[in-house]
Image 1 (spheres, helix red, strand yellow):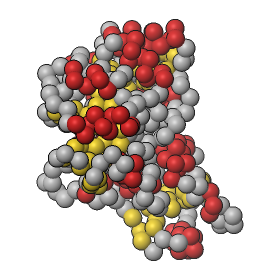
Image 2 (cartoon, helix red, strand yellow):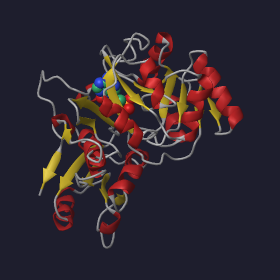
Image 3 (tube, helix red, strand yellow):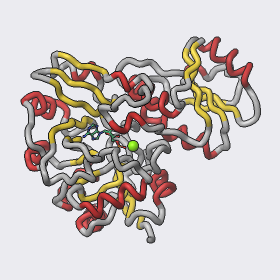
Length: 337
Ligand code: AMP
Ligand code: MG
């Protein structure tokens, strides 16, 4: 199949929406990362998404809507807290897990009786949902396990020949996937996957916000994941990623002891002065780190890095999302110095 590269003008968005209506799949920019969009209500289309990504069948897809008011069409119950959260955070990078109804096929929800609902703010994704007039299932548009794509070029590299089209909408604003939450009781949210809607932001609306254990810890054998994606090795480039927690001085001496051919460091902008080894930087604060992380992981592969020591980000605010992606990219290999 020839994968068509589309632009973000109305005429091309109409072409993208036609593909979706016909059961084809399209790479679409969103404010988080690029998604692989398909009609969420069309089983055959959704099957193509799992095939193109090589995604395990039990890893559910998030369903994207143009407006939260449409959630009633695809769910069987919506708690009052979900409406309050939607008022504050939709459209935007928040996914709420809600009980699904029959209009969402089991293949879309990975066999679960719940569905993740998100209302994206990116004008391109938003317009394609409107034009297609369908709920759009869209996981990140990468090959399963590899870092998520934050540009049309990343999507092309992973999906060329496997999907109908990619819409180029420039580089993704946030750079990490949406915050995924479930709702417990009257006023509690549980974060299943951290993102740019942070715990602190959710606390503006919820009385309590729980950070699921699996966000920072590896699941024990046989333990059930509240968020199925959490049990897979994820976000991982070909290079071996090792997170190093501690001071810059400690980091430099650790890298010095383990330096060699094809060894790189991924450090903060402020670490750059006099850093003695091969390095790339990934920003000066958590938001920049989120924006740059996946791009840098792909670039490190491109330059042939075999081992990458990464300065560990903080776990507050958006930093939690960056830390969560890195600890999975590292297969939970963290050196504490
Ligand atoms: P991605 O599609 O790559 O952004 O990954 C979506 C992630 O959202 C999945 O890996 C799950 O961990 C999570 N997710 C989606 N739907 C549900 C659901 N119904 N219940 C729990 N987690 C979900
Ligand atoms: Mg993904």
